[in-house]
Image (cartoon, rainbow, N blue to C red; front, side, top):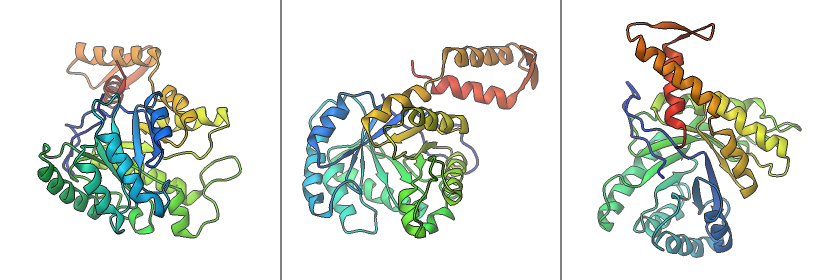
Length: 304
């Protein structure tokens, strides 16, 4: 299984491959036990973390552990690596340690489009040095973790390797000096809801997948079901998880139901039977070209 899409120009997003990873589970890079558990679990994609979940003193050992995990041969699911921010001394050490073992992708935190393009240059050089196919290592950018990043969310079109944009509320709260990013019921406060919306818009402007951020809760079953369902309704294509208990609700929320797929197929068939029509009737409702695009997207997103 892969979770990739092609970079596109700012003019259109017609050649983007569907994103297939519903759940993206973070695993601390220094924990062999947690990685083994994650590999045996149901997450579609694993992110080996070298950033926030690893203490500074443990980062050298975590790099070695992640490199070993990547180099162990056949993989049952995509393995990505979240490196440290490019403005830290750890970032290049992370890349040198892991690129030679060909992770499926790199997650770049606390970034802007300029830093994403710089990462592409680093990856190009390291791929060549390791004898890897150019652009075989893909990229996800965490695009809202600093105040300046919020003003650049419309500038990701054409960034090489970019498959998805996601966002983060925790580091943004720290950047703003906020004491909280959610209310007592778990709802995002206004500045962070704005960041989420801008990420959704920026990803679509760039023609890549928008991915929902983590929810720190992993005990409230109702909330674990509601949050990813709401994210999918808005147009997010997957969601990150910080605990294995969150994976199953995320997968369920982002799996189209058979009723949804059946209706989508009927919409597509209706327009194929009437290729010169821009608006048609289905079950007493009008459907038009936007409905056709949504139907095709749903079918493409469905896991077979």
